[in-house]
Image 1: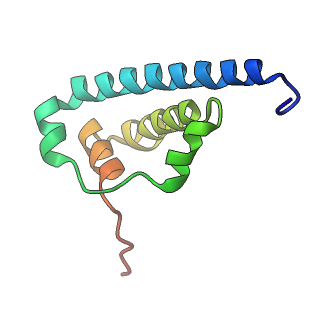
Image 2 (image 1 turned 30 degrees about the vertical axis):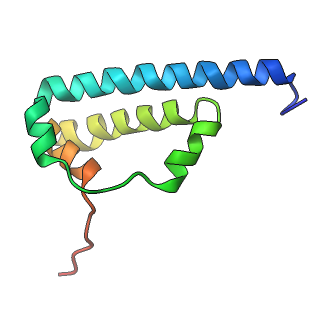
Image 3 (image 1 turned 90 degrees about the horizontal axis):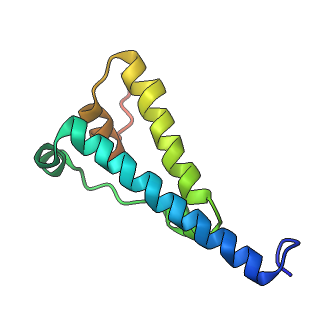
Length: 102
């Protein structure tokens, strides 16, 4: 038993979580490419790599899906509601941020 359930049930949760992650990620990518444009996304992409925590979350059921939903919430709450564009969100997500001291 793993986490109080049979191994088969646990693997079913993992597989279902991965399928949901891929679905949400594909829909979010299509949404961004529709609003920004594929060519513009390629040109403005930074060199930021995914953190190790995001990569390791693939093994936790539904964790990657929650990370994708978190990114959608960041887009809506902190960018679109404040008048920023989808492109500025894309640049924020793909570029290293430098702490500027005034």
